[in-house]
Length: 376
Image (tube, rainbow, N blue to C red):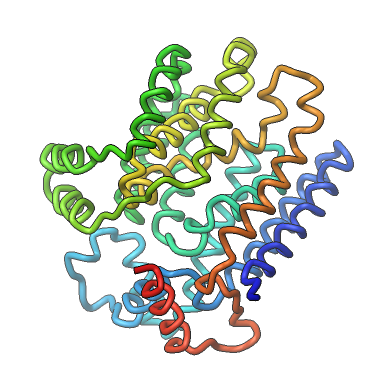
């Protein structure tokens, strides 16, 4: 029996030890040490990864043919394309480029956590266990999101121009960064509880009946925005597949109801800001209403992953019941272990590191092909 998830479980265990160290004292030094080691471990593990996941195949092919001398219609995300072409022309291998991008991501992630969270180690645990697709496969998306969330600080300070420029820059890594303009509206007021309840009920119905209405929405959106957005909307619906009914939705519905049941306590005491509160529900609603679209989940729901993560990490503060607060962290960590085991336990995630030698491109491509053939 293969245990492909074993290295990832060991990684989560490292962060659990780091979490207990971080919480062993209220001194700010503990948080700084946890932040440093959290970032270091992440870069060491993911920055030097081999051909794991799925999208490495497309990124590696793009990287191998990239050059600053040639620009095509596929290079519309100019920030990411420029970095790829520059590193390739400088003679660096794809593995070094992955390391560099991971380093940028960790710097941005650390800055975000330093300003917005006091649960640094737990944030890494949730990130790795719940959002592996972002970390491993979606290089552009993850980088764009981490750039865009830096704008939250300036949105809260009402420095709109700085926030807008940051979001604009994030779009040079992935065009979905434009979605972060919604944060200017999401910061104003907490979503109405009655509206949330109604949307949840309809969302559950849409989810379990697998009602598909994404095609008409994307076509209309593409027509309004025009240009490259219209083309992307077309390819999105043509190549899309259903995300389907999955067990993980129960976790999201449970967390949704838990937060909603503490609505009055959260809003009256402003336990969490409207941006995080509202963005969390945006994440949940996209999961419910667009489960028939794999692309919508991967490209748009994940744009709000940070809000879902912050809710999960700060669950102790969001619950009014004092006795429940004392025990809530343990089930979260246990859930993350379980999620890690299930998610990573397939051949695509068989971990390798370039530190221990270069992996065969063709062997890994064969594993990838065999995996997808077995799913057909």
